[in-house]
Image (tube, rainbow, N blue to C red):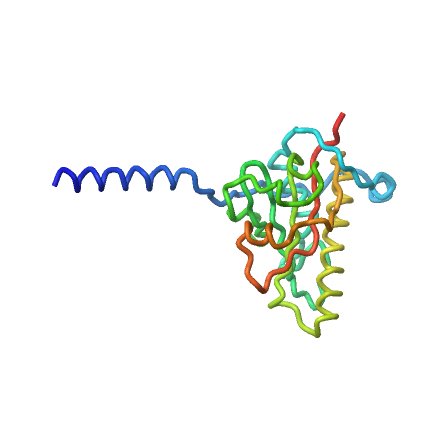
Length: 211
């Protein structure tokens, strides 16, 4: 009985420790949809940057960034970036030092994916592993119609719309960003627990510019 009690105690302790390490959904602040630089100025200042400071991106800024990229901007659930046939097939995975999440635009939350720091898998360039935030754009091919060429075109275009929204938000708010195609899709897809019907299209690093 004593041995069984000890086994039970150790099992319960282990479950408690593991549970404490598990990620939980993150409720984002309501996005701030006013302010920022005028559109023409943001377009003038839009650029790609491959050097980032170690400064973390605050929760409010991250919420604004994700909303600008592909948030809900109308009561019917339509989004800030267009998508073919309103498929809304692109999911944004948010890879940070604290863990990896997927953006739930309808709830304005981050849903947990992995507690490990996966930034090193989010791209092949060295700066990716230390960039504060890496966005990974993943297409759910079950939502996309048409033939193979059409699916490639639609998912690529829809990802481009989102990435450009992110670029413009970053230019408006003084953030640095660069969109990237160089990703080990097999390794990252495995780490993100993607299904065979999900495809990594592009990734985008975001942070504050290095001074």
